Image: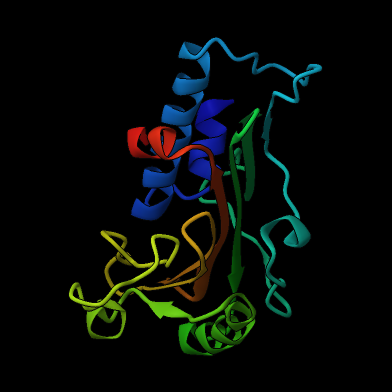
Length: 195
């Protein structure tokens, strides 16, 4: 099942690989901290792993006429991972879609959709996403960090570090493949530093 989740959510995407690594670290931290992670108990701890997700869960609309994309026949075009306990929590939702429209047209659509979450960062253009290190920026302010699109692709982000909405767009043959991601991470500063 793990192979299906990883490949179905875009094994070639550096962003997804990084997020998956953060999720694995969060799972390990919860296990080491002796927090229950199967199902949900009286303290409000639990875990979710699913090969299904919706536009509502990712927080972005589906591009008109788009259909689910699978790299391989047994892949799933959606993934949902969640882990929570007490003040700590992590959630990842991924939808992988495709359209016959151009990458630029899809990018314009999602830049508009992402704007409801705040400033839209274009991670393919460092000049538009670099922050001035001399300015006092909020620790919750989202940045591109090391996230960059695949060669020939585009990557957009909006939200905060705790609640990120990400769209990755790549031309692939006659279609445009795009991934919609929602990442939520909450917890103490010590737990976040460990991630």
